[in-house]
Length: 168
Image (cartoon, helix red, strand yellow):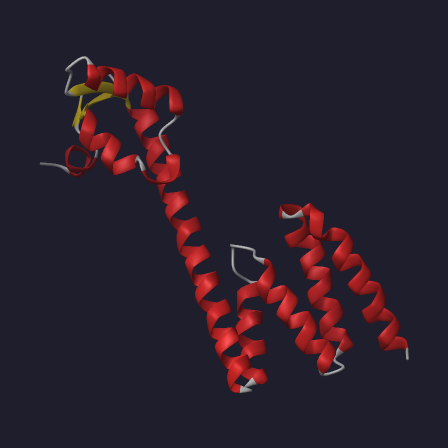
């Protein structure tokens, strides 16, 4: 049995694949990568007693691409959370240099979250390292505020204050 058959089902010569409906749904349900109209169609087939469906190969490949992207997003989110937790641990232990290093690593993550930005701003402010605080704020404004526009005002105020402190 070839790769395609194991993963997707039986390929037909006309650009379609015959899939076992329940297995296809089970394999692709996580992350909502099956388009809702296709999901409803497949559910209706199951309810009417059908076990197989014939799907266009390009639809199957698109779902697989979306599934892979969703898995990468979840992995990035998990790594981000793990690094945040590690940074918190280092802070509690008083190892601020290691906490900063850990939070900095998170800034290059494809999953953007507030915690590392916020903690770095606070830690750099406490160290009177205004250049790094400003850099982190600017990075937050560039990336984080695109995803969370409600935070923009908070970071703009913080940037203004950091610049003023730097000038003192």
